[in-house]
Image (tube, rainbow, N blue to C red):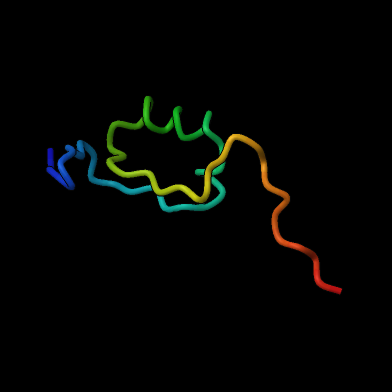
Length: 57
């Protein structure tokens, strides 16, 4: 186990931000079922979905 910023990281692998880390249920499942994952990087998280990028004409 490694110490980082006052916390302990148990796994040696990192999940980068992207399509896998856009759902709270998916993040929770990864955290609970894959002990080798030590860090999960997310994109912006909020209580409501965001509209996304505007389409240019």
